[in-house]
Image (tube, one colour):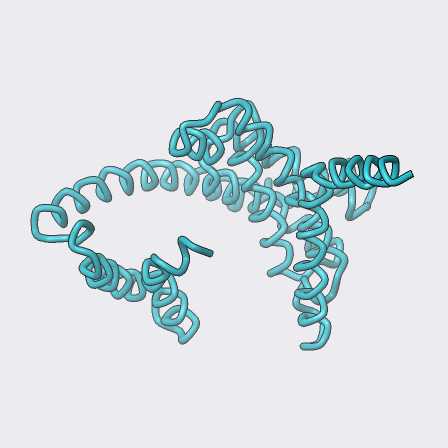
Length: 254
């Protein structure tokens, strides 16, 4: 909250991009507006101001980063094209449904396993795109809403960010915080296991699959808010210390 109070304006570019996309503007147009807003926001503080030199440096770094993503997406496009035009997508979907015995729960578990393995070798975006081609038809065949099916795959594809031995986000966070990399990795693994509950909500709860009414969606939001807090609190094991203090206090008073 302290950081948010001092640097809340850095969220403006993301908010601007989101608003323009919600109003139907193209991703490219929204991104350009977000780019201009980034430059404007940088001038709030003199030490972060983006002048001509910094703009050129940022453009160079952005171009290099986009080339890596572009090459990955280009190769994925070939894979998706082969799977789609050959009809293998439906075959893989049938195999997945058959392996799961028609069970939605087991199908989601298979998708989680596939995305975890893929995420160890390719970026999260690539893992999502490849898994979505095979998994979404299987999920929709089992009655899951199309948007919810994509959200299940998207949600599970984030697993490679926080699951050892390949967890890029956890290692990056450890580097920034100057913390032990493996301890950070396993801690992130422990706290982010709510990741596996999210897809079940998308698959089974009407409010999350966007098939429910406005009330269903609002109630789902409230439940997940308190559920996430309770889940994190339980995994943190802070409650064990509270219990010990409670018994020690009663013991001392007796």
